[in-house]
Image (tube, rainbow, N blue to C red; front, side, top):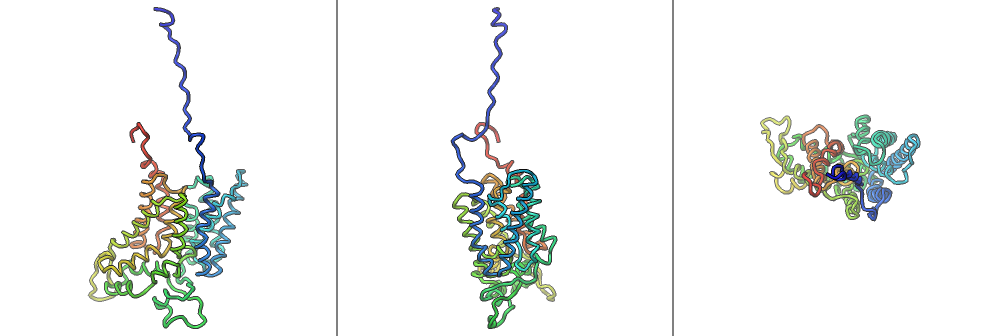
Length: 379
């Protein structure tokens, strides 16, 4: 055997593969472009908040935004990393934090909420793109537990003509001369009373048909609630703009709102009037009482409270939501299911904040099991 056949030359080492985008692929949108566009999409609801709740709404927004920007800049300087407050992400966080607060909360509540949102929920994890949970909701959850009296007022101020409050009996015979604002319970507190079985079947049908907030008041925001969550119409308009630009995917809002709607219509309520002798208890979905009560009950759940703000601007956060279309549908459906369970059967009238935070925790698992199959490989 020839020497060259006995000892063939060694095969050349394989060239390492670099996995990356093509060099001519460029992203058309930058982080500052997206973040400042989100702030612009929130601007109509921000302007309306001052109309509905007065100058204190603007005070809370200004304090939250200033705190968020200052804390982010200070921590980035301390960490000796580039200061990125000009990208607008801290401004968006500050606006969303203030939107989750009642206008009559004490001034330092918005400062503490923004401080926790930026320092703990964002910068402790490495900054923008590294956080696990939505920073604004972490700030909101912290002050909700720390300042319960501020975050759960018994009455909310409502401006304009007071139709909603007149319907629930706070104002009778119309608005008195010279009165520009009245106070009353939020629609979510009334919904909780209904869901807890505080009304008989007859009283429930009457209350849903004849009283409480009108559809138009719920849509435009002339109801009790937090600073930026009441005007569903303006929040929807801002979200439509973001969806049209491709910065928000439709799957999360559609799944979120759809599951809440189905749950409100078909999950059973315990319809018994406490203290009434001979009243028969029974579990029955609201659709059993006809289209009028069912549609009004559905409108309350979709348009009142923080559902629109959460579904359109909180759950859709790019950092804390899944990457795939199927994952977004699962994530949105989970948020909706947890929200309606808390609203109907939990001890808290609103469930948006904690539902989104719980589902934020599942995002890595959802991404793992919904990633697309690589061509030529098994799933």
